[in-house]
Structure formats: C-alpha cells, structure tokens
Image 1 (cartoon, one colour):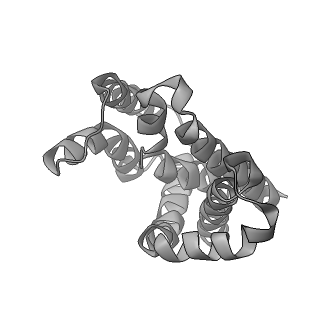
Image 2 (tube, one colour):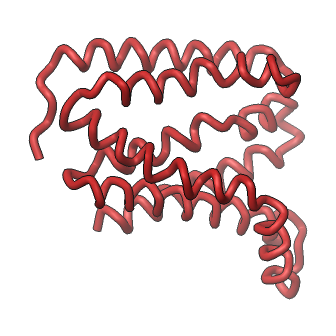
Length: 181
C-alpha cells in the first residue's frame, strides 16, 4: 500500500507541477515555481521517510519520482494542454526522449533521497537534513551563479526562506528521539 500511495502522490505532484507552469495567466511566478528542482528531491525524501527498510525506502523514492515524471509528461501532452488524444503516445515518447537527462537524473537521485528520508526518520541522520534543506536553500544561488535564475526574485527568496524553515524544523526535530521501525 505505501508504494501505491507513493505512486499516487508522485503522479499528482508531477501533474500539478506541469499544470501550474502552464498557467501563464497567473503570472511569471507560476512558471518559476514550476521550474524549481528542489521539490523533485523532497518528494522521494518524503516517500522514503515512510519506509522502515532501506530497499523499500529506495523503491518508494523511485516510484514517487517515476510517477511524478509520468504525471508531468502526461499532463504536458494531454488535451488539457491542447494536444489531441490521437497524438498522445507519440508526443509522450518524444517528450520523454527530449528530457532524457532529467529522467536519468531522477532515476539516480530518487533512490538516494528515498534512503535519506528513511535515515532521517529512523536515525535523525544529520546528513539527510543537510542535503534536503541544502537543496532547497541553495538552488536559487546555484541557478543565479549559472545565469539560469528566472524572474521574479520573490520566488527565489521564498525558496531560500523555505529551505531555512526546513533546516530549522530538522534542527528542532533532531533533538527528539527518532521513530522506531
């Protein structure tokens, strides 16, 4: 059942992320939020957090991200986005091929972040907290350094603030006893 839940949550996350990014009437902030990478690492962390066994945590992280990619790609080539149903299969395949770097990145990082989630829940492993909070806090700085930060600046400031909040939450939670499997 946890794997089914990871898949459903991942599918919903990916579809919602793509839908938000396509809503130009909301303003430029919507596509900037949709373009954030850190939530795609937090997703498998949360999926792995639900698992007691290492292999299950890694599998849950991977399932969540694969489902998220499927949700994102499906929404992109759906009638909601103006793609005829008859073109779905070919458009989906073309979209997946054109995003192979992101797919491979997800296949590599999802099991790792799933395992980090489990290690945090069971051991309060500080490295897990640092990697999750760090990816949220530092993404805007990395994008800025690479010249890939898109407007508005408020999105990036909000992401940094969220990362600081996550770090503080981890620091407070680390003082409590970890959950037992």
